[in-house]
Amino acid sequence: MPIKILVCDDHESIRDSVKLILNDSGYELYFACDGHETLEQVKNLKPEIILLDIKMPKLSGLDALGQIKALSPESKIIMVSGYGQSEVMEKALSRGADNYLVKSFSGKELKDIIQTTLNKA
Image (tube, rainbow, N blue to C red; front, side, top):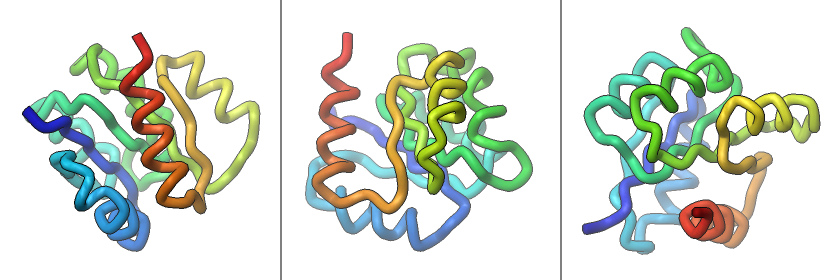
């Protein structure tokens, strides 16, 4: 069964980039463009990996993080941000995020962090 990845970002260009990078990787890709849509998708899909943008309309990634963990505790969450601020990263990790990725990432960085996160016990 393919691994489900939910990509949550309000920028279509980021969603498209991830789709291009991961299209041939054997993953099932799903997309959400705000925090509320993300929560709906998590409820229905229970994805193995969630790429969660920190800054999104309606409900930020940081605010959605706890709700996602309650809905799908097995899902691994990789926070994605355009800002490399260590205090934001620390806050996300302390709230249950499994990893962190800073935009603009390369295809190799994205694939590597997904693999690393999947391999975490």
